[in-house]
Length: 295
Image (cartoon, rainbow, N blue to C red; front, top):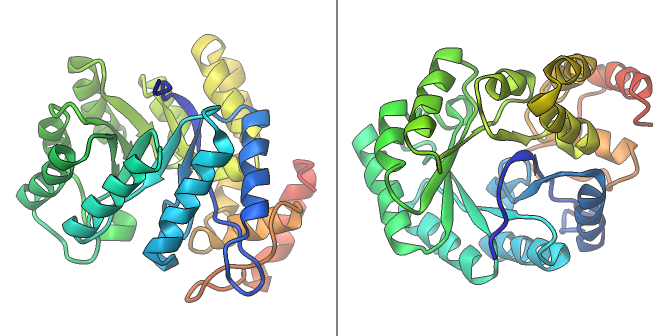
């Protein structure tokens, strides 16, 4: 039975050995740790999981392994988007076969489709793959913005059940919440750690979080407390304000993987063209991690 999706969902890193190969032992430990710390869902091989530099066979092996390690204890969302509709369809279909509960489909990047092209892209996948799908809008990375009007059209498809919205705009979130209110089954998740509490305040369903890689319990508690004790949730969120900013001093997932290495969770490895965190940022990050007792 598919598990409900709400609250804190980690955009999980893909741990690697020093030679760049996937570290499956570390991956299993991360899955167990997130379940223990109260994370409500795991995105496997999204942007933070370095989907852009994993070969398709590796991509599917990581998703399959996370499904296996989780063993039904937590919902698994497979990152399966691509700028090729055919490739996105194939990866989504394979993700369904290997047992993922949902798929997360980033807007096609680089080729800059029109809104009509986006509708056809997503409907083609939704018609072809019997897995519940979450749209993913992150124009700062893709040069492609999925408009609320387009989301409204797509939300009518039974297999398209939500969106991860990374645009930090109250006007945008209000429009998406209007869609959700018209269709109670349509979920709205923030894709922006710095502003996700605003989305929760407007009725959003949770966050797909980079920060949850290092503070899983903290992000989970903010989501949980926000339902019944908003003041406490807001206070707790303020505690992590500097951390949220430091996680994006360089391209994601460079800072978060470096932090996780310092925490002893993963080895210090990331695939080219991304490289280790610049030394000029390291002192400030270490200081903040000490302050938060992460190390």
